[in-house]
Every structure is written in structure tokens, then in C-alpha cells.
Image (cartoon, rainbow, N blue to C red; front, top):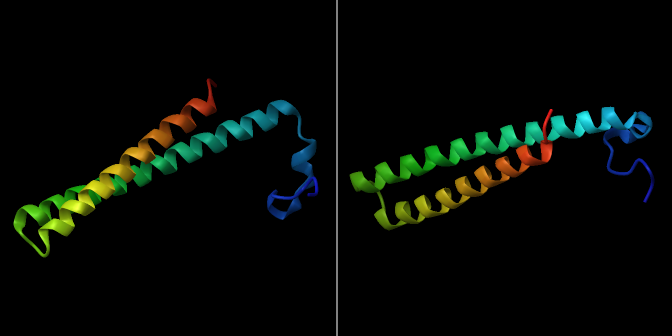
Length: 93
């Protein structure tokens, strides 16, 4: 394993940054991850509402819609937990 392995483009300048800049970059990365998880949770929540409405209206196979609701609810909840964790990992400004 090389020192630049896993760094996009093998950017060696990243390795020589002062620690405080690295911490700021890590914090920003965690905040971005939290925002992405919240967007995913929102999309899963929309899928939950859509499948619930379809099941209530009797569109298609109702049992399949109900299973989809459970799957999307679980995915939504996982993304919300991941967002909260990423925010905690970002720490205080």
C-alpha cells in the first residue's frame, strides 16, 4: 500500500496539509455525507407515501405495496441514523 493509495488522483499535497486543514476537510466531508443521507431518507419517505397510497387505492398487488412500505421505511430510518452519526462525527465547528 502506498501513501497516496485511495486519494483521488494520488494528490500528495493532501498528505502535507496542516492538521487543522485536514480536520476542516473531514468535518466538511461528514456534513456533506449527512446531507446526502438526509436526501436519501427523503426519497425513501416519498416512496413510502407512494406505496401506501397505491395499497390504499388497491392498485396492483396490495401485499407487494405493503412489503415495499416496510422496506422503504427501514431504509429511510437507516439513512436518518447515518445522517445523525455523520453530524456527530463532524463535531462542533
